[in-house]
Image 1 (cartoon, rainbow, N blue to C red):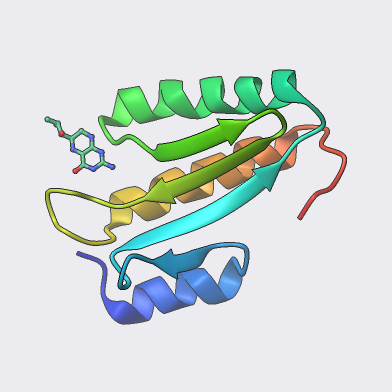
Image 2: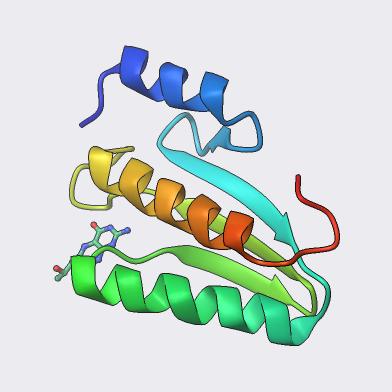
Length: 101
Ligand code: H2B
């Protein structure tokens, strides 16, 4: 489990990420140009997730992906969630998206 200090440091440095589910998960919404960009983003993140054996909960509709990260085994946010969040943000930043939030 991450210490509350480490989690709040992450949230302060990444204001797009919010706490959810009574502080047991973090969530962020990504907006893309179209479905192809959304799905490309998801493909990159999926390959990383599979490699790490740590998987996102996510919802996609057209150009929007909402990602929620939690560690079920730990019943809370762990360094694995932060690692996956940082990776997803990196993929997003490297894409030519219409709005870089
Ligand atoms: N992903 C996430 N986000 N949380 C988990 O606790 C988790 C996972 N556990 N991916 C893994 C897989 C577990 O279910 C398997 C059996 O190792």
